[in-house]
Length: 120
Length: 108
Image 1 (cartoon, chains in turn cyan, brown):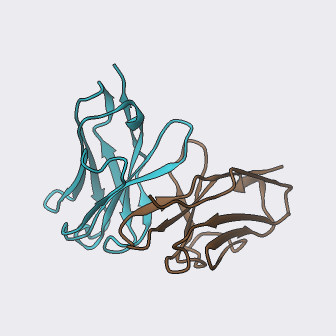
Image 2 (cartoon, rainbow over the protein chains, first blue to last red):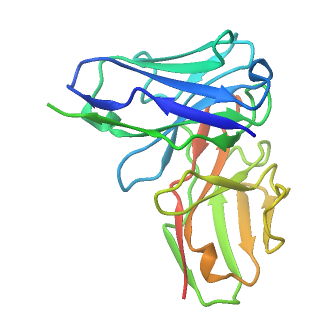
């Protein structure tokens, strides 16, 4: 069965960096796009970024563009989110999710999330 | 940036029909998707491509889309349907995705 396991969350100071990882299993990783979606405490879902199945296309929400980078490693079946210049408003649970297709569709399977807290 | 607009809350009695709307300028050309999220859990897709229902989702969940409005309908809502519901779609380019602000459904 499809499994997505996020890791790398924690407490980080404003302005610092953090890298999240998402280990995928139970499906052919190279055939699917991957998303990161976040949810601030008590708030709604916010789409963050998507990377297509072959890694050629990457798109970001305006709120993170230029600060966050999504990437994937097919040898490790893992997708990453490099987060730089973190701000208090980046505090959220970060979910990794598989795209229903190659990257241009919607998240279908989700991980359980990893909490990132940006605080001094 | 592109936005999808949902009502913040909706309350219905068990057995009644709940209708949750989602408006967005690109919806005439882009699919709408719907997710249910219960407290402390990851979201679950309940409708994809405007009206299709994933396997395992009860038949009481249905979707429709017309013009700039998509609608999730829960016919005969049950207590276990309580939670937050989010619509999801893309801007006109198709590359930037967006969630609606979410609708908190109460069934009591």
